[in-house]
Amino acid sequence: MSVMVRKVKGTKGFTLIEGLFAVLILSFGLIGLVSIFTEMNRNSVNTALTLSASHLVSQTLEDYLAVKAQQGYGAISVGQSSNDIVLNNQTYTIETDVYYVESGDLSTPSVSDTGYKMVEVSANWNVGGPQQVSQSTIFTNY
Image (cartoon, rainbow, N blue to C red; front, side, top):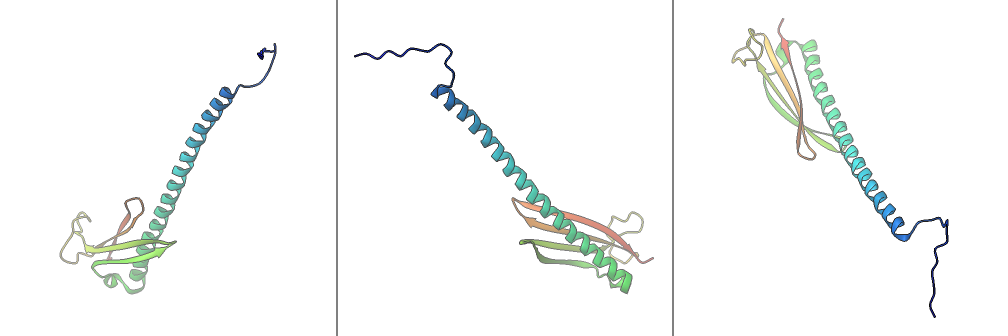
């Protein structure tokens, strides 16, 4: 007994191979979208960490400005300091370097008080590799 399969004219639909091929193409597209969302999330986290570090550095410089305003130029001690701050479950190392600079160019370090102090502050953290945000300013005795 033989069974004959006839194709009916005007039959609509997909074959199994066509359906599998469509699923394969869609899966590649979805994999691409997932990788894009993963990268976007990683960039968002890095941006948030950098923003937090920038705020910590700015706050540290503002603290120095307040010391100068309340106690004067002499209250800003020359030297280096470092402390760890935990913010949003991330540890930042805040490093501060205060030193005298030459009055002629304000970038060359000086061994004596010229009336100008450079204050450099950096925030360091490690997520996906070492990261850093730095700012500096100059305080005067005038």
